[in-house]
Image (cartoon, rainbow, N blue to C red; front, side, top):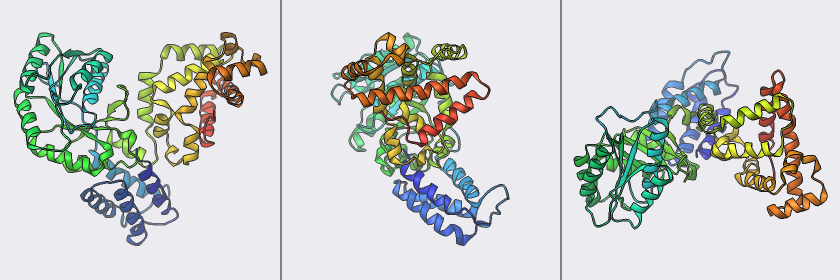
Length: 454
């Protein structure tokens, strides 16, 4: 997400380098480029107009200190306005009600609403330590109820069974009673969607809202629909007292127009963002972090939080002790690192959050594709335990067998062994003074060269 916008804005900001002061003249062309970049990102026109006006007002005449370049000053102003448009700060859920706190999910068909119900429930269970029940009132879409039941089983959630022969209102009342009986902290209700906003759908969900009196009414919107997402959200907010927005499928859109438009158009905060199909690809929406990513400054805080939550600490500590004792970083350790990276959303997800990687060339990004690491893991799994522990024993005949077993070529096995040697050298530096910073510099250099190639 945001790749196109990030690239255009970076080019524009670099053009201001070398200027002594930000004037009306030298920022006019830059603002024109910013405006085009926003429009190409499918940001709604009212949002673009407001953004340009605010940036121009703040930038013209601002003195540039010796410690900052005009480009840096302009970057600061643009960053502040991006954060303002997207909501200034993250907005949590209001759970200060008598349990169960009801969350009503609304949205059109095909936006990922049912999956978002399960993702949100899982998030509440893991991060807020809540007991969550989910239920579906979608009696129109084939297998909608079964889909939610399957997701609930996957995430180990309470599930209230319903049937297509029931009325949505009856399901809602029964689910609320079941949630109280089972002492659930939260009840999340999935509702039926349509291909477009219509009176029948709005009447039904308004009725459900009246019955349930939800603490939160969240609108689920597909980021890939661009500014149409904001317009649809506005139509819902005019009919329903929405309390927030969940933005889905953000990994499928390189533009980011919905994220920049929906908060301004609806005057409702984006509360969560979803970036993939897995239930774990769901997180709180932080406007300041998203703005930082758009401007190529990365999102290191989110990366650290993900590492805290998803890295296997026991394995990490075990590896640290092993390296400190001077023992070699073997291929089993290397495979563990690949798996840990996958737990954090894969390499692509990590690259999006690292400063400067937004400007990596496409060729370089292709070379660090997730497929490379899938192939690497297959190669390692085709080795014997002794080969993984002592890679130096892997010679010609062994390489042929490993390549054949993993469905790869001998040169792929050679590249893996070469990369492992490089990683082994970096890991040895961990036990030395400044070892961690040296290793990070080595990894950064690897990324700039296009990353591991398998």
